[in-house]
Length: 126
Image 1 (cartoon, rainbow, N blue to C red):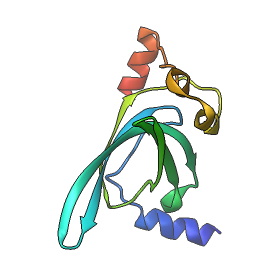
Image 2: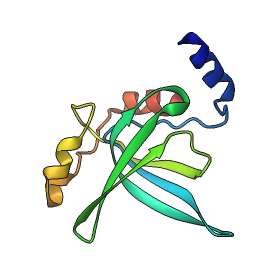
Image 3: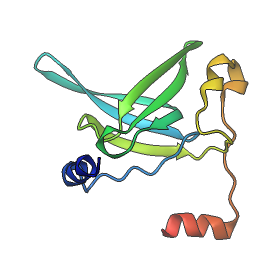
Image 4: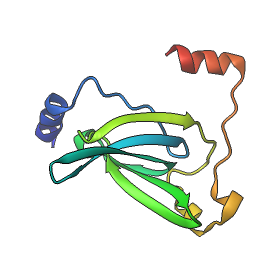
């Protein structure tokens, strides 16, 4: 197993460092190739799960579009992800937020995390 981790570390892109957790609202721009055309599709939603480690790690985003829940799972180190930005940090108590699938309306959201000025300085500084 250590051989696999060593190979993954060599292949892992060094310039990509996505810092987000489950419960955060994330805006993602994903490249879609249709024939010989390429376009960028934005997707903004709550991260309901992160799994795996190394190059094989994946995450799932969920959003409500026209009163229909839409979930997409993305590989974290996919070359098709052009940008990933955390819109807001969420406050949660679970590792997986699958219970949001059964919630409707305002209850299908995660409360925003609040930080004291010292905590905010520590987060932004590191």
